[in-house]
Image (cartoon, rainbow, N blue to C red; front, side):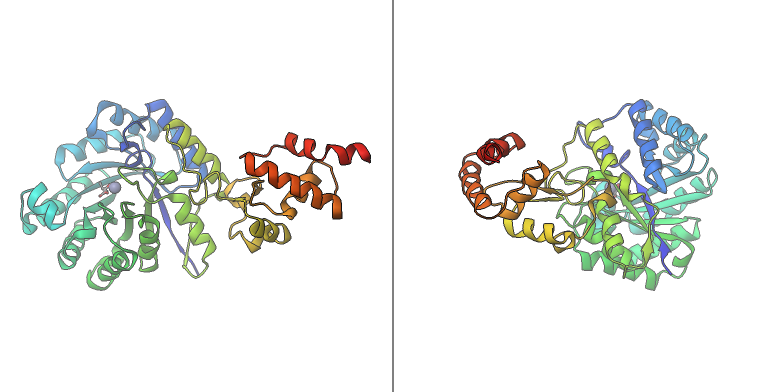
Length: 385
Ligand code: KIV
Ligand code: ZN
């Protein structure tokens, strides 16, 4: 039996913090509705105290969206929590996400405090948030660099104060998969009341480990993942939703399931890229332009013989119509024949060999070979027939 893995999307909060990616309320509603259709469980809609625009977006998203839980971020500060609660007043299911820094860096240099005072502030914030909503998530900022026993203590106290979800952010993207998994395992083994809350991963990608760390967190007991579409987010970004969802779908030994409607992944990725003015790198896993494009002769031949020779995901499963066989100077005869067949030109034997030689000369001098180029190449064979 698989457990449910809660998908918490923070594209509109952590993702939107990227310079140049800001959206207005109307655009945020479009994104929130697309996320609802995609099947996300929780939408982090914003940080209401941060600006009147963000407050208003949380209000409007709460009105526009019915199924997902709507979450609002706050620091462990009463005024933040009050404003978050006010912004959530129209949410059918609202969650306040409050928390505080827990690493030695944050405690000493950012908050200029002591570990004991940090625990007190965390407990006070969770209890205060509980006055407004039942569903309170506590985040332990910079948990990736925290002292593990202190982290276990503050998480235990946050749950005792009423936290329903405990979020373990690797805020600086510092950890390696084995280390991040060990943090989650440590909490599972050392926090006496851990079964009363869901553990959430929240990983940043500074070392390119966000997806691997998130999966490691899940393998060690986390049951909520905090992600963004296309992995957008500050600096090197957050964990990318599409990567985690498809990794879980491909690996049946990870005992969790998501509600994500995977054929909607590609269109959602394009929507976010367009609205946020943030191009998707061509080789991006799952949603990049080249994610299902085969260009070398050996791979093209293999994939034409049997798709699974070189594809671990059926492109239709993520909303890509079909994989592509790209014609370059590295392409083989099988790829050329495939394209000619699609154009209705059936060449075999010597004729195909001759055209292939001419094709290679052209492909060496030209990056993109178009159908028109191919028809020119095979012109004499068509005319002769
Ligand atoms: O990365 C982080 O620590 C965060 C928290 C505010 C949840 O985004
Ligand atoms: Zn973050």
